[in-house]
Image 1 (cartoon, rainbow, N blue to C red):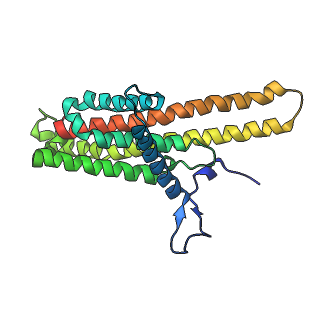
Image 2 (image 1 turned 180 degrees about the horizontal axis):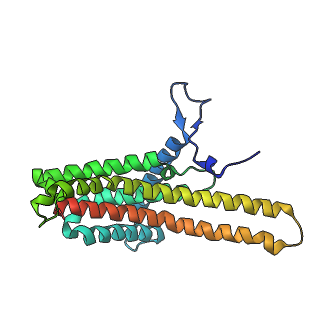
Length: 247
């Protein structure tokens, strides 16, 4: 039987024998809700057990807090404090989704373009609402670079508009492609390593070499899980800066 490395991305219904026939819960929905529950329980546990001298987990939480706050300050200075709750929530949520997907027999919800695109579209619509509320109709001056002659407006405005709309595509495709490609590569290498180990023989070192590669790739994937959450949050901060400052 042939097993495709893309099988791990299939969306399938679960608990169909327990739930009513009209209620369908897929693996994507289940692990998305599980991510939310784990994240909420984690921060609740940290807050309920916080001490004057931070413990290990409290220190990690405070470092994450400062990390996101520094990103906002670099993009928006003091104005970033108003948007800290949503930016911090977005960073921790994306990172938790990526991290949970590294656990065996789980599902990576950020490896599907429909999820990342929907999340990016929510952010995109929210940024436009903030920009219109802040500047009114003057917000549309964002599509005409300052100092540009009016003769070029018919050419520059469509180009700037297309570039602006494609921001949501840049957000969603970058996250989806990196997570899907990394997990696919890990699946292929894991299958190859398992077949090498089951062959047997005297070349034990050669057989263990793919396993060593898997360990290295797993560490790389953990770093990418954090990096993609960082890139996602950084781009949102930059787009938010453009919506507020019109540059």
